[in-house]
Length: 267
Image 1 (cartoon, one colour):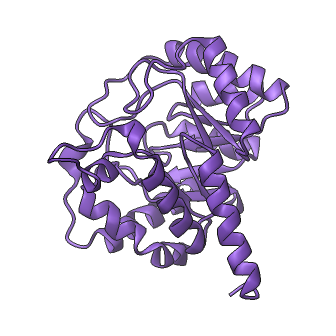
Image 2 (image 1 turned 90 degrees about the vertical axis):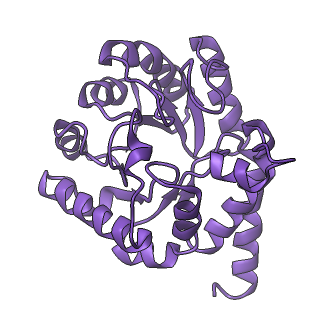
């Protein structure tokens, strides 16, 4: 899953693809590089980000969705709002990626149920402005699993077919670096929830901290190799997909893992 942030303030590439033409060009390049899905978002969810209104989110994201879908790209809309998701689905998106897991807008799971499209339900403890203050766990794997199960049950109760749902443990969302590593090391336990897993670790600050040079975290653009390493490990652990800013190296890593699995007879 390749990322197109049509935003001025996303943590890694905010502003680079803010103009519609630049976002479309970037989405096409991700597709050409091997992205199976291109995920379009018009609202930043980086730590500390403030919200925009639905009209602005739609203005940013939907023209990009429309053009990429028309070009034959499989498009996901990254939104917490029913209104934005509805406009994007009408424009050609075929998946909804909801970082709130249906908690921010209770109408969004209802829309997904009616549309019958795949739905990414992420672990979430609140909006970006203060989410890092909620990174308080006794056993992060057990608690994230329990909270994801609760969201899974809630969206199913809203009418979403369980088979449509992909779960995301929310790396970097109300998590410290230690929490993120614990979750990545426990994908087998998260898989016990019985749904495919999407992992979004690309360029995130816990990788920058790991790679700190002289005490300063490595810049987001210099975290590409570490992202590829996480992708390989996640794929080997059975993840359904990874959400990444740069596609080719990550797609190559997935191919290597698949070849190794085939050589082992699928073990």
